[in-house]
Amino acid sequence: MAFWRVLRHWITRYFAEDEAATLGVLLVLGCTVVVLFGSMLAPFFTALVLAFLLQGGVSRLERWHVPRLAAVLIVFLSFLGVFLALLLVVLPLVWDQLVTLLQESPRMFAQAQVLLDELQERYPKIVTPEQIQSWMGTVGNELTTLAQRALRLSLSSLGNLIGFVTFLVLVPILVFFMLKDKDVLVNFFLSLLPSKRTLMSHIWREVDDQIANYVRGKVIEIVIVAVVSYVTFYALSLPYATLLALVVGLSVLIPFIGAAAATVPVAAVAGFTFGLSESFFYVIAAYAIIQALDGNVLSPLLFSGVVNLHPVAIILAILFFGGVWGFWGIFFAIPLATLLKALWRAWPRSDPAAISNTHEGTTQEGL
Image (cartoon, rainbow, N blue to C red; front, side, top):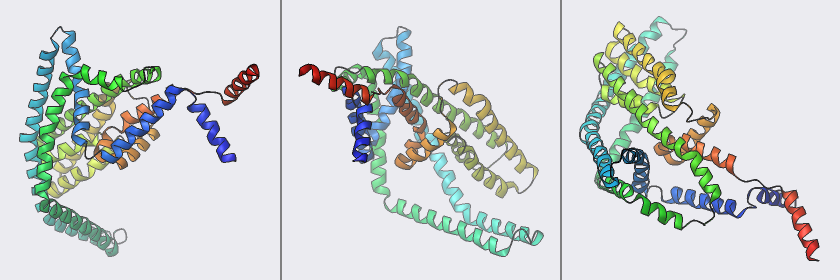
């Protein structure tokens, strides 16, 4: 009985208003669709996100008195040019460097073993043979797992290739029509909602600018950090500069953790290439400067006033949404956390005691 009383109290408090109950049902349905059909509808969701980002450019051109169709064409053709450049230039280069790195991994593995043997001879009390054996066994298992995954990928390459090509064709088409027919699509979606949507409008206004600014700022941050990292690594003659720059750029998606995680491949490649020489320390110092400038200058400049979340909330959001939706969950973890915060702040709360008293008063008047 106590459980049902608490449940009834909770429902009365948070779902007494019709709009709150409707919004709750819509949220549950939306999450269910994403979880169950997310992989199937991945091109649609990707195009929706890209159209949401590009709409800012279309709106800006419209404010400059550019006709909407012309603004859509300008923004879409610019997006298509960047998309093709990434597909035809950057992606093959990254793939070639990744294949080369995998081919070089046995040599790096042997070199690491020699280095650990030297450390064990110099510091026998700190580095023991058992530790070396354990470390090398762990690395060997990881390399074996990576090779098995690569083999499975190659065996199913035809199906993956067809799906990849379909994705590449569908996404630009969907983006174009979402930009071109934005008003038609929005009006159709609004026609499915209840006529009374004050709460939904309030929540949307609160999170629209924050989410749009955050996602656009994050894309700009990834590009800037990746380009600066590539120029730095290339100038220092570090191998796999494009691949490592991409890793460093994507590391900004995960606050507090990404920079530390990206340090491992950068330090490993620099160590295997230059040893413990001056060039190695130049690479590490340059990488540290890039991370410091990103964390203390670029990130505050791009996201000042956009994200107001506690670090613990950010980490929990990354862990949860990343575990549910993988890469896209990590990318949108902070916007989704911002949405949940806005929902919590704007959600109407009723006093069960007041509702009960009102109901009793109405009943007595009826008698």
